Image 1 (cartoon, rainbow over the protein chains, first blue to last red):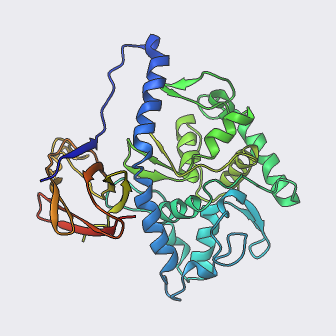
Image 2 (cartoon, rainbow over the protein chains, first blue to last red):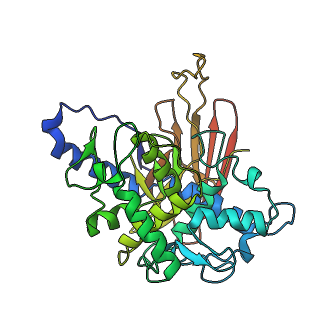
Length: 268
Length: 103
């Protein structure tokens, strides 16, 4: 047998002595991410999503080849970098997940209730079609500069609504998004939080979602990210595909304009 | 039936570099569910890699390997167009085999 060098990357919990170890922890987390970059399990979701994209589905037996993500029916390359956008057929600004749902309901004939049964997977047997499809579509924009048309009037309205929501304080904790994401150096436990009021912060954060969450063993979409932020803020549950979720997504995507999309990434 | 693996195999110098992502729960048998019942162990026990039908890696794994495991390794030799075949078997005797052509 030939000599073989093998590496298995497992999940190793780093023991950390306290807040003074903050900077070295950040370095170590960066190293950990780098080590995982090559073997990002997001690719497993991308593969499943690609298969799903090309396979006829639903009562009407239609694939996503007729689904227009803004660049023409079935065009995936670069589509995610220009979402959310205004869709005349739906007369609405839509993000990726909302648009996928629109295609499932209107083209494939799947009822909205069935299509949204599993919005977010549970890291095990309950898997979400949205997470797989989003991984695939987003992966096809890797290296494409974010280009959300914030000058388009409908998108512009959503952007402004999103901005308002970002700074709106409420809930039992009187939190706004900006409470955690409006200053440098904020963190939850050892997790650094991006400062989304700065262009670099918004770009770095937005261009890495959807992402594989190691701690959950699941690929997460931007709808999930916002939903979980709302939970942490003790806000009312953010409804999947709601105007509020799209407005916030539009604001953050618009703030990321100009940066190359770099997802689906891997997060702790 | 388990989901497919994602395999990349590339010639680097005089050896072949293989990177594999496997789709597996890798349940340790140490965790409990919401009802307090132990979730039974379920993990890949054996990984076997062949290059043109010759075994180049045979690994025995335990429950300490993470969910959706990533395996990277090199073996000497291998040329573009050769086949690399990977098979895993888990403790439920479920198995999955995928093959890739070296690029």
